[in-house]
Length: 271
Image (tube, rainbow, N blue to C red; front, side, top):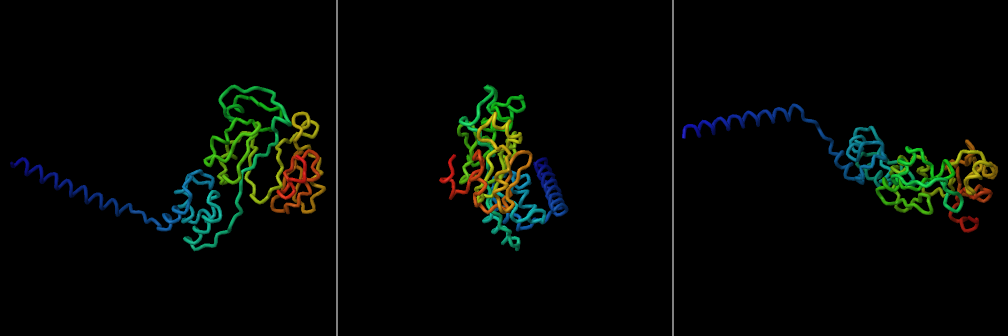
């Protein structure tokens, strides 16, 4: 009986000491948590995709509250999320236009040919590491689907050998941009429909040998544009989306029809 009593007392004393220690440690190392951080985190979509440049939504929320990131840092949430976070932070959110991923390649089986048959791992990055280039065009889409694998929205598919993005599903997380070993994918403003569907930087004659739909760097588009919205750099046309008015003049005069016209004129211009 005495042994049981002593044991009970010892355990009780140890419990009191450990409890006191925990209380002291908790107070000593207590970190004040800004309630706004939890509120901001609730606004974020929870994809943890890293498109904002932070490790995940928790890190992004902490950065916003700390003033290390703007309230519109999340490209997935876009304007609606930025507005809600702006309300929490007492800031006016600059509403950014929604963006979508765009594949800068028109090299379908109808306009180019494959120079090799790939039988390895069905992944574009693996093929590039193996030194294999499937299409004749060195800049063309490999069509093995690295972008599909990383897309959390199932917004990408392969059609006739080339990756295609469903703009309605795309949230502009940018994971496909990072995954493409050919650097064919870019994020563009959703409203800007005039886009150059090519990435080949070779000179015109070489481009024509490997793809009948590739940009030949003729600068016809540049001469047609009245708004300084298109240029040719390294034999490839580029659109300045800030200046582009979507008039479609460049697309109308493009001899290889590699420039996508605005929606209103797509029916008028032959493919």
